[in-house]
Length: 382
Image (tube, rainbow, N blue to C red; front, side, top):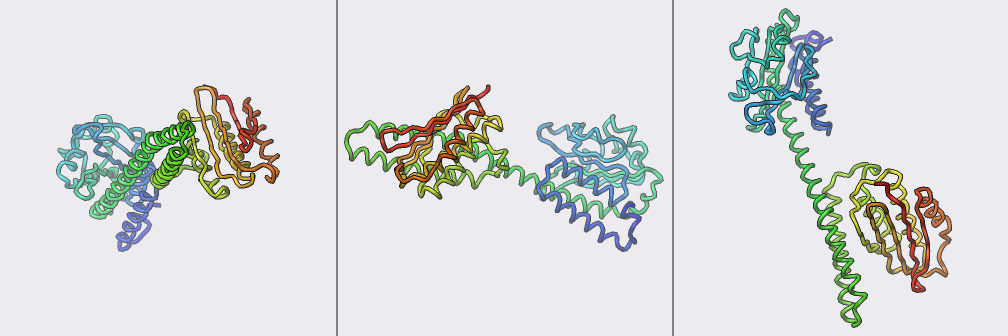
């Protein structure tokens, strides 16, 4: 039963206000635009008893002479949602003037002029309302509501044109706020992506070059200066990563790209190691990975870092990642003492097993006496 017949006329203003508040709450709750617009048209039909409701919006993609039918509810016209139509007739009039058109015989109005594909379906309308959707001086489009001739809701609805306009105004403000939130999120994601793809890659490359050069320098004081520069670069990289994490909208863990999960694991290792492992990257980690490979890869990083932390007093841990067209590689090197280490057998066994399940390999070796190196490699199917 529609609220228009379920409540006393004296209570109608309150019902419209509640409907507008509910609509605003839902629109600003984070639902996508298409769902939001369907909610607006459905709520308006519910509260007003209208047989037909549509939202037509101005979209810069289509230019000045075309508008987009974004949502339709009623008269079997729902399949026209998402259809561009000429900016003509009552649509164009209310968008150009910012003034509503309300008529008890809308199809007889000279300005009616609906798109040709709508003419036959809309010919059954008596009462019709074309109301501009405008917020903060910006014209967004038009809200259209129509009642069949002879509808039992026509008389009451005609008296409530002002309430429909208030509802449309609330819808326009909420839709504009929703669009602003979407644009803000897109900007933040774009900036975060640019920082991650360009700045972080460059910082990693510079750090790798400095690390390589420091090993080639014979003079201790120059080597010390190089290590100090590397430490400062690591600190700067961490700050940039923190800025990226603050900017980006976190997706669920199973939807994160591999590079984000790698950084999360390295940050988590800082708690157990007391310092942040050095990260060296060769290739682009933003390439999409098969889900089973990505899960095993992240678990391998976690296991190798846990193994490093189990050694006695490590002061240096390096995580080297390499991605080529056909292979993903992980090498974790630490300088912890092995004599008093905790038993890591289960960890290393799982690393071997995870690589084997993906037709890859895992080896553990000592390097230079005091370093333990874990190599984990799996093939990638292009």
